[in-house]
Length: 423
Image (cartoon, rainbow, N blue to C red; front, side, top):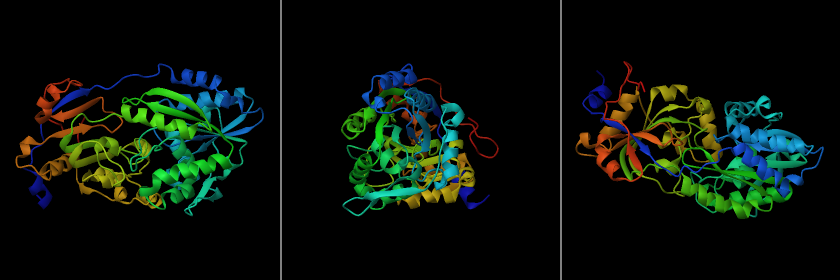
């Protein structure tokens, strides 16, 4: 028995129960049809002329109904007589390589076969100008040569700063279309100034490029599409703040204000730019954002397949597993930090041999006198919070909450011979 085993062996893992957290379930029954209708009634679509080559900017986020909405958009552009093509719009994601960004889109289901449009990927950029503070503004070289540009993205709270414009169409333009060079430039002065620099860069790009409209999507707490808006280029800056406020109201959350331990099964770039959404965990990579529960110790157990080894966010946790570390592509992960200038999330958290040891380590260090009183919650990831697991020590609080339903008896977490959770 080594020193870690000696320290962790007596630490109890709490008994758990499964609960259902209830949120507003408003959603669109047929998002693709909704988008088709919005496009049909949009004056912006009529600006697209026959024969024009149209760059459709699609990003790396896991957006509900992304494939069907992208295809609907492509079909609408074709009906106008245009020749649409897709450009990966994701800053430095995909290892900051052209092939890597195509691969990211493929993992999200975006291919030429699924959308009916070719994907043209390059990391080459054109400098459009610079802001008054000296920051250069770049755009994807291929998109810059298009006759028209259309942007599709989800609007949601950012994970590292606050402002009227956070994560959405404007950020997609400034950072996504800017590729690695543009993302690097936007992050150069840090997140303290992102609320100013993102819209400033986007406005310069809107003036300099043939961006015709954006498709803005809002999702409910169940990762389902609940609102779609087609915003003309002149509307984006003024209407996006309203969509952001709705997105904030609909954000899924943990219905407990304080936890001793939070266990997260999966992190990944398809879940959040930070691997896990700090708006849910309460753990932010910068001091310029806030909100969420008070969590003493946090554990991340594994990576999603879609993240392709990008372990950005693991450094925000206190503990992780050898399995996660072995799967990580560290050069790709570090590229994320070098581009964003926020390197704490790309560090390796204290690494334990198994899920069981990582969970026990979190219980041991969560600063309570009696380990059997540990307030622990376990979630699959920060996108799926409808059904989660909580320790029996949270049962009384759960019973008193009007939006929580207890849906199981108590049970022990089950581990295999190697100490990894079996379910």
